[in-house]
Amino acid sequence: MDTGSCEGEGADAKRRMIDRFSNLPDHVAHHILSFLTISHLARFGCVSRRCRELYLSAPFLNIDELPRLSDAKCSKLQRWLNCMDRFFFLRGNNKIQRLRVCWMSHFVDVSDSDSDGHVDGDDEDDDETLCSCDEYFRMVSWIHNAVRCNVEELDLDIGPGEAIAPVFPSSVFLCGSLTSLSVDLGCVVLHVPSFAFPSNLKYLKLKSGMVEQGFSKWISRWCKCIEELTLDGIHMRDTTIESSSLKKFSFVGDNLTDTVDIRGDKLEEIVIDWLLHSPREKSLNINAPCLKYLSWKGNLMESRNIGKLEFLEEAAILLKPEVDGSSDVLEVLSSLCRAKVLRINEATIKASYREGSIPASFDNVSSLDIHIKTFGDELVPAVVSLFKGMPNLCTLYINSKRPLYGDEYDACGFNMGYWKMQNFGFIHQLKEVSIELSHGTNGVELIRYILEYAQNLETMLIIHSPQQLDELVTKLDETKKISNAKIFFKESKKSVLVL
Image (cartoon, rainbow, N blue to C red; front, side):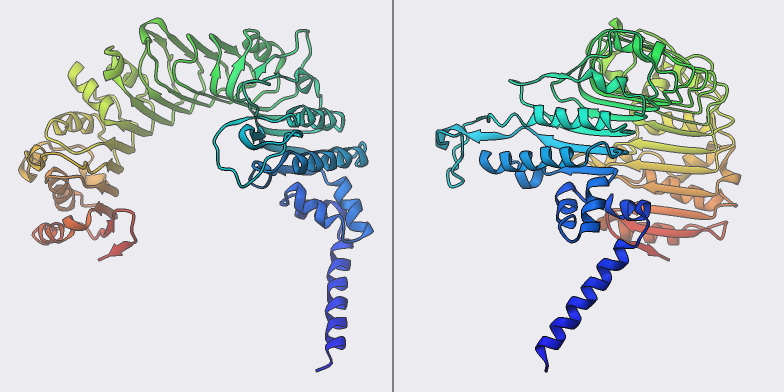
């Protein structure tokens, strides 16, 4: 074999491949390069002059070097930071459409560092301290550079150590081209501009940090284009926001605020996920006449008003009333009566049943998704009360968690005869059912009832443990199925078996 000839052909093929890429229009090449991290992009820039041009003009920059540099010596990190500084200098004013930075503070092992702060990788001592690389401040300079280059999207996940926690640069909010900002603040304090300046932000997500009290006023007064706002783990005493453009609002975090007051004529989606230590001292007010989706997870508070949700299509109510001991769960449920899709958990069902029968006001609900621990005897009457308020139900999902410990006989008190006596209004139009079995027989008896009386049933999925399958099949063989529904058996976290 002519080795030289083969090597020559291989080199020619490589050159042809590079030439084909080089001949692509800039926007096509930049889209392909947008999937690379900055290190891979830099390697690409070394291939040819054309590749270098594309490298320095790339509008999508992904700086995610955490796996490679988090444990590196300071000298290596310094060299990499210097290369990044040079890259931003060489690319000049080329537009940056999206900049993503994912970084954690660099630590060194003080028990084995030399006079320059370098670490011997052979030492396994746990004594660590922040190094003196100043990488966070270098990254802030890159953010300023992106602002200068009219960046449109910023995605920043930077976790500085407690000792250096600087203020997030408020100049970012003065960037007229910026439409999307996602910041994991860590222990950084967020200050908004102290003077009047309109923002073109459409999407804003803040996570794990603190914001000053003027934040809510700034959002309400100066963010006239904001459509989506997410506050995840953000400490702010008063969250009062009124917006004529906001469409989606999410607040996630335990005991981080005293007041949530959200108002907007265009609001279509609200997500609340919290656990309050002193709910009687907190308040929630929602004024969103066009709301279509509401998800409320956590506990109730003493003062609340969620208004009339005339256009509500989907609601998730996953409360923990046992935490605060408050009542009026029925009042909250009544506010959701317009929903077509309802997701509800065991704690909410039990609390509402203790307060009285659930009002027969869920005529619009066609899909019900129930999350329970186990289908125990104490839960069945509450579920029946819920079912009777939903005469137009077509889809039913029951998700349960099989307990590690528990008396199986606590979930065997209701046979098919009990279910027959309930005369559910929805049984003849039920089309799709998915039931995840826990211990006991209550769930199996409900399945048998549905199979015998749901004449329009199309599909049923039964999720079971390996130990339940034989007895389950035996029970179903004794059941007279009224419909031509397909029954699927799925072992928990395993493949689906079709009969």
